[in-house]
Length: 428
Image (cartoon, rainbow, N blue to C red):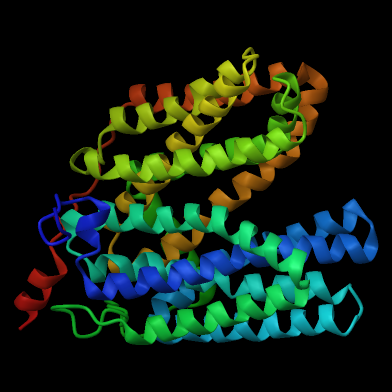
């Protein structure tokens, strides 16, 4: 089977579009560089300060700007040419990596590291909204689930390859070389964006706005929130994505306890997170199989159950292999929920307001990771490690039941999505 005759909705089918292949290539190199840089950044700060607090502050500096500036990034993605925004973000982040390399190489004050990291992360806010908005313009609608699955697969591969490459660079080189390599990945990403063309759509990056003049910032953010409220299915999925993010954030703490519980020790923590990544890759493969039922509540509830139920079992399991398999299942469920959410938002929301709506949904999911990592230690103290796992996993399962039994609400009719090629032909 070739990519030209691959079943609709699969990753292979999405790869038949040249423009999407360029987009995915740019994401692949920059994602790998990002995870490489994350490792090098934390190591650099800890080596210079010998302080876990400083390491934590630096990690927060890479997360908080996305949460705070996400709505602004969505507004920018709906106002301006998305190619220019993406290239500007890539070049700005490349410059920040060069500055970090200078901090590492010339022993500049380490307080600069989290500040520069925060500025670099700020460039991510409009970039992710642009990527999500451009993807439906590069592939036909039936292949949209496969395209989103491919993007998630690239992220999963980056989680595995980036830290491994970063470890090699830190062993044989320095943090400065890791930052320099990440700067290069952003340059390559910008070149990939420049190369993107879409069959049948002469300008896939141009924003299709119904209004001639944009409104004020706060009003545009409010319009994004209103667009989400108008689509209960989209809201359900955003809620599910947040639940899975809270679960992932809690896992960053609770899997340490599970690793000791099953006798794997501290190194088992790394094995379990590798299992999450492997499970996520399996989830991306399953996304194509359920592409025709993406709007089904039962599919969403099943994906949530795959994430929540193994978390409950981790509270009682004592076999190392079983713990790793169960952890992998949680990764499969959470990635499937992420793909379902992304695809539904792209299909349900009008394109001229998509960036603003996504600029609210994506930061909310990132904030869920922070919430999960903050509440997990308290739950472990109050309920014990097993009790904390039961509480978190039970909450995810409870949301799955809520999805199944939530009463239906009347919504305005949404036009059926059409392939971008058909849209362009109609315009002519």
